[in-house]
Each structure stands twice: as C-alpha cells, then as structure tokens.
Image 1 (cartoon, helix red, strand yellow):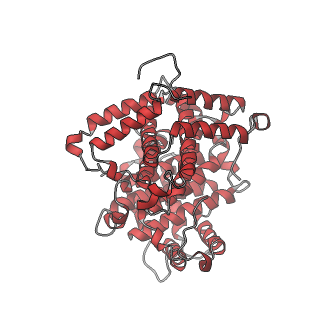
Image 2 (tube, each protein chain N blue to C red):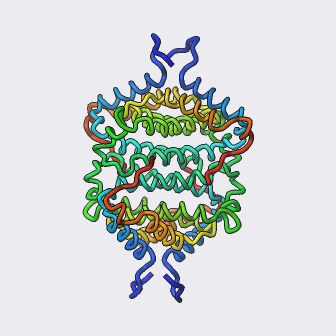
Image 3 (tube, each protein chain N blue to C red):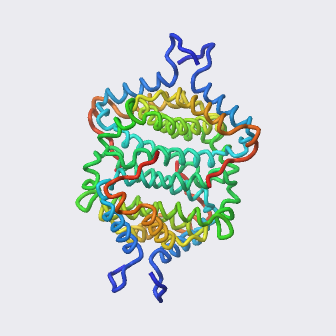
Length: 121
Length: 121
Length: 121
Length: 121
C-alpha cells in the first residue's frame, strides 16, 4: 500500500489511542510489560467468551446472527492495546503484518502444505 | 468510516490473510476457538520476549535502536490471527476499535481519571 | 488437609523451584509482573500444542497413547511459574485452590446448574 | 516423593475438581481446547490485577499486607483449570513438574548461568 495524502487506518487508530492516553495522563502506565499484561487481560476475556461453546457452534454463536457484537468488543480491546504497544515501541504494525505475511508465504509453500496444519513438535 | 475507492488498511490485511488461508486450504482449521488458541500462542511469544527485561529498560530494549524487529514480528503474528478471527466472525475490526475507543471516552472522563489507572477490584 | 510431619506436595515443589532460582541467582528477575509474563509464555506454548487439533480429537491426540508427554511438559512449565509466583507473594497455593473450590460449590449449586455451562454475559 | 498411604496434595485437588465437575454434569464441556481457553481466561484475570502496578511495587501491592487474597483467588483459578486439564489428559501434574525441574537443572547449569536470564532469541 503506497503513501498517499490520506492517513492509513492503523496510523489513525494509533493516533486516537495515543490522544486518549495523553488526555488522561496515562502514558506513565504504558511501559511495554504493562501493555503486554493488559493485552493478555483482553485476550483472556475473548477466550472466556468462547470457552464452553462447542467448537462447531462457535462461529454461529458469535456470528452476525449471534453475539457478534460481544466478540467484536473484546477483539477491539485486544487491537487497542496492540496498537498502543506498537506506538510505544515505534513499530509500524501494518507494515510489520504485511512483511510477516510475505515471509509466511515463503516459509509455507502452498503446494507442499495444502490442507496440512503445521504443528508444533 | 465509509466506503471509498481505496481499500482500507485492515480490510486489505484481512483479504491477504484470507487468500493465504484459502491457497493452503487451511480454512478448515480456522474455527474461532482454534484461532483464539493460535492468538494466545502468539501473545505468549510476545510475552516471552519481555519477561525478564527490567520494566524500565523494556522500551529501549525493543525500541528502534534495539530488538524492535523481533517485537514487531510477534506483534504482527498477533494481528494476523486477530484479523483472521474477525474475518471468520464477520467483524469489522477497525470499526469495532473506533467504536470501543469512543465508548471508553465516555466511560473514563479525562477530568476525573487524569493520572489514575483504573484498577480491577 | 491438615498439617503433618510430611511436607505437602505443593510446598515441596515451591521449595524446589525456589532452590533452583536461588542457585542461579535468578530471584532478581522474579518480580510478579515478570513471572506473570513467563506464565503467559508457557500457557502460549500449551495453546500452540492444541490449536489446530480438531476439538473432538484433542483428548486422544494428547492422551496416554498420544503426545501426552509433550502436553505434560508444557503444563509442568505453567505450574512451575505459578508456584514461583505464589512463593514470591507468600500465597499458599494449595490452600487457595481448596478455598476457591469450596466457594465455587456455594456459588454454583449443582441442582441449579446441572449440565449448564455458566457463560460470560 | 515416595508413595504412601496418604493421598498426595495434587491428586486430592484433582479428585475434588473432578467431583465438582461430575456433580454438575460439566464434564461434557471439559475437552482440552475448552479447558485451555478457560485457563487463558483466568491467566488474563491474573494479568489484569498486575497490569498498571509499577513493577517495583507489585510484590508489596499483592503481598501479605496488601491484596494478596485477590491474587491468591486468581492463581487458584489457574491451578484448578490446570489440574482439570491434567486429569482429562491423564497427566500426573506433580510428577511432570518434578521431572521438568530436574530437566531444567541439567539444561541450565548454575555455574554457567548465574545471574543471567536466558532470553529468547
């Protein structure tokens, strides 16, 4: 995605979260370890939503006809802290994700791994 | 944020991750609970990077002059699975994050909470 | 379980982990936030083991005839850090677990909740 | 720890959690992936307790003179789900932890690693 006059979506979100933090003088709490713990807290809430739902019903239970909004809220919280952590470390999160995906394309050739979930040894 | 001629950044990333999954026939593994577990795995790798670094040195250790690239990779992995989960559930992740942030502005008035980290009881 | 001459199992484990830490002069790294991050790292490794295994095959895949030993290792790592964190905070982990279970018996009456997974709103 | 007439502490806890589950007919929900997600939820609650506390005050904040009891509750929840997962997989959690610790003693010689936190590359 090339540079243009318009602010990129993740950069905009980063700016909004930073403004939110500055207005509350909460930057003092946002060291990386604290932010990772906050991220873990939100991932925990996301996990709790899904924990007892049978695997084959989870997509429906939290899809457009279900509690999608609840899942969206928890996912939003995860993204907000991830974006905040990236800002604190000076990481361009969108660029990092695109680079990682390009790298995964090389490491996991579609021809060799079709239908095979690479599992941890 | 309304539709415009240009694809939004998170939508583009979502499309790239979906293509990656389809090409490998990995959609079959991407039920929500499995994706949350994968997200947890990546958050765990992020946590491991920071675990033994003293809190006041973490931003430098993983900043532009340090191992920023390593942190960026793990954060990218978290974002990729988050985006994939949002796609599977039909969630507009960018919109959800902006809505959540607007909600947080209401719930945490800057005037009342300046410098105070709201803690869990 | 009342006090007796023999050291309780969790107390023994706590002592072993403490000795391990002292011998390596690693107590300096074991502040609570760092230990929680380390715990998160191990939980992440546990999650990675299970992530792409179909839900209805996971118990077999990591059971006595399967990769039980791998799961046991990751679960052991989680326990070790949990025990270490408890030691640092002066928490009697076994007693806390028994108290929590007694509390859960009161909060979740078997008669009312039989077969119903209490879900997060 | 040698075999004796008395039930070991972790075995006792395992039995209590199993009874609790059976009485509520909740075994049906306790497949490994669901239990790992539940564990993640509890680890998230533990992380939330610590997230905004300055690193050098966390041990005091959640020590005997502080909110130790709150930390103990969350740690108890983590242990309960860990013990339940071990039971479902047939893992002897105490033995696994002792074996892992013995293994760590070999992998991390005290002489070579004194005062050095082995970090992830």
